[in-house]
Image (cartoon, rainbow, N blue to C red; front, side, top):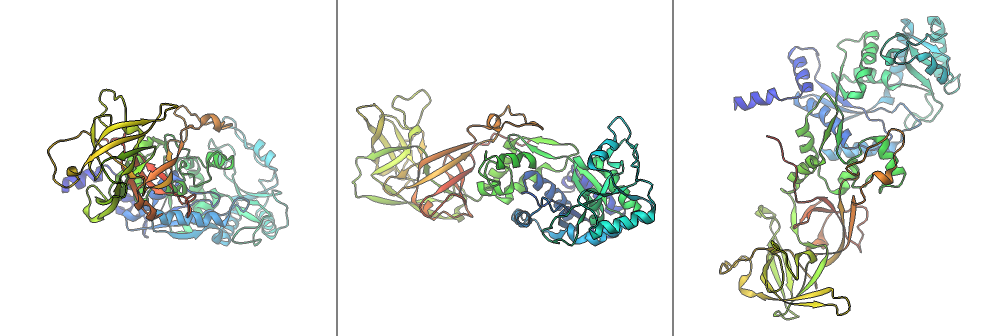
Length: 560
């Protein structure tokens, strides 16, 4: 046991090791606290879930707290509907959260700005956005000081108060930090701390007409909430010096520590909020909850369970650099979760009629079939067996090729949970020659569970009673993008990038009658086809639609 524990300690990620060292060295005289600060202008996706999971799991590991804080400091983009959606998604993931709003700290952030002004560390600037870009310089050339940089402290304080009071138009003035216009880090070239926006905020209304930039508000919000470790994605690494500059100049004690980890990318998935918006707003997918998207709403509608996602994220851990994960790995952990909980059922996608000629037309036998191959606690269901059945068209071959062991003329197979049947005759359409139905006989001595062992067959087929089966539409999902797809920062021609087989509709499937009672919150294994759930968007009282969550076949193998 001690060796296992030691190995586990050796393999923890770099973020966990850092927090562990801080706890052991009493760096903070408060509990470990992490946060996730989404802007409420869109929906969470699997990359968001990755960041949330890292922050939440580290806080939990050290008996700390995890905050969901909405970065709602831009009234032009934010909406309360996204607030509700994000909270709902995190609750669905099963992660405990304390909910805060950045807009609630407006007074404290403004006071922090005044403190910087009073120290001579911030000034009001009148440059236009275009002029500011020109003055900023380039990666190889230093920037130039603003002509307003040397305003007196008194003048800056007075102008900032006027900004708060609404005396200026949108973008007429900004408050900037006074740092270093020649810094090689562009984020330190007198960044904007506050801008003027005359727009109604979804929570504070018109109380404020100035709003802090994220890089300024973020460290202050972390400090107010007692965050110890501000763990964010790698694109914020160059922003860390500004984060630390703000806290240093505000002279806070035991300042929170920002550290970064790599973003999660999954092959065949689009995990950029910008690209996701292009797909949704361009009508290339069926909304933000399209099951082909990696949004949590899409994964949820597809039937993925929160436990499956947590298994996947828990296996990844935190990496320093951006990572590209095989989508098969995500499917593997989804499948591992589903196989333990799913009820089995039979569904025929492309039906071929079978007539049992030695069974009377009015005969229906109810067969008890287990709901799960291994878990007896899930019980069993009654499935009707009758004269006319449906099997998969692909399970019959009139002239079988070598290695084909399913049904063919003169051959015998078992029907799942039922009897052996033998093909005696093939009925064809006289005009086209297409197979219309096959006539078989069954052996009543071969009933499943009867102990019959006199002969064996090489195949077991799933089936559905034609008289009792129910029609349904099945949606089969594959990767949204082609294997060769390369996304462009400037222009994506989605029609050329999307996999044409990312959604296949099976419109005339036949399901066993137990599926009439299928519920939205349960998943099912359709024997030989995969794991399915009821589609919450298109299922109606008169039409059943099922989404395939993942196929049965698992191509990804965990490394030893």
